[in-house]
Amino acid sequence: MGETKLRLRRDAELTESGGELRISSPAGSLGLRGLDDGSAAALRVLAEGDVGETALAATVGEAGLLRWNLLMRRLARAGLLEYAVAGARLRPVGAGSVEPGPVPDTPVRLSRFAVVTAGDGVLTVRSPRSPAVVELSPAACALLGALSDWTAPADLGTPSAGQVVRLLAGAGVLATGPEDDDLAAAQWHPRDLWLHAHTRGPRFTGRYGGTYPFGSRFEPLPAAPPAFGGERVELPRPDLELLAKTDPSLTDVLERRRSLREHDDEAPITLAQLGELLYRSARRRAAFISPDGQELADRPYPSGGSVQELEIYPVIVSCQGIEPGLWHYDTAGHALELVAAPSPAVRALVERARSAAQLTRDPQVVLTVTARFGRVMWKYETIGYSLVLKHVGVLYQTLYLVGTAMDLAVCALGGGDAADFARASGLDYLAEGSVGELIIGSRG
Image 1 (cartoon, rainbow, N blue to C red):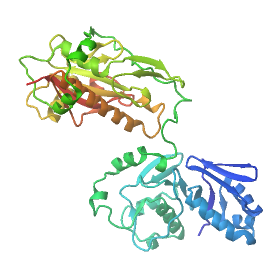
Image 2 (image 1 turned 180 degrees about the vertical axis):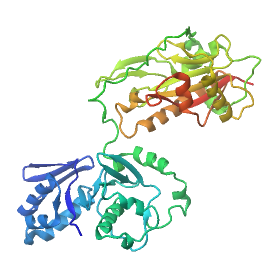
Image 3 (image 1 turned 90 degrees about the vertical axis):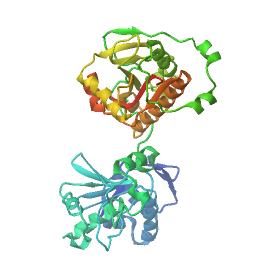
């Protein structure tokens, strides 16, 4: 049976100043004073890389072992240690206690919430409910196959397998019983729980928020996307001063807001109405450069960090004053740019919206909302996509309220197909993709 080796977590730094040893990591900082010479020396060894428990004990000396063991427990509870054995490594990535678990005395299997990814020559196994991961070398990866079904640890074949099971247990990736016997656990799909857990705070991930993960590799995207170069239709601008005097009250609009699917095809929405809706909801009011060099924008609805990554693509079916097709709303110039004339790919966007809204005839206009993902993810780590979804929500509400004030029919849709939009627009699915859809028109 191999000896477990330990080290300070790889993203931690050990510094010494004024008689204090301090360990700093993304999970926090721990200051240590009054350590005996042996414990201080062993801590320095841990900071250099993997070291066996026997060597650490020798460095500490017999007289200091009790104090050292207490210190190790403190480091484990603070999530500051990594453990390696038999080609596997238990590694903290977030904040919270991390240490190997006991070998279960009942059959176990991989949790249905366990996620496995590949990179840097290892498979990484993690649970969305744990601040730790287990990295498996190629030699240790075979254990995952054995744990795809209920297996007693004693039946895994080798003593080293039991050691790896301890690391997997410490990372919370093993199930010791049913995981869907109650609604609280059964209702979660692994992907949903992963997104929820890792976008709510840094507890389960070391890097979180405005870390600029690509700031040193790529230039930030400009506030406006490149022009499409097709036909351009300037939109009329509404008189906001007049609207401020004649619009219904906010309370009235909120109380009257409904999802309305039926349109009046005898009197379709007009270009002026579409232009007013877009101007009041999504135009760019200002642009400015932030201290980090990113061009930011101000629109009527809020956006995290003012990145304003959302774009609107009206799919026109029936609108007085403009031809059918897929158009893009230029938020800075308040104009529509033709992206694609009617085609089977554009038609697929209409069919998808019609099906989602359970309509028997075509909607007059489908507003496809996209995100230029690099606008968000250049700055924000882990939370990028969740920010996009929050922004879609506030844009939906803004369009609903303005549309209600204008007596238009507005209905947000529960889903769409980003691949359909990529085919219709010719845009890279990974660079800019659809994240929301609404149908709008004159009230039926």
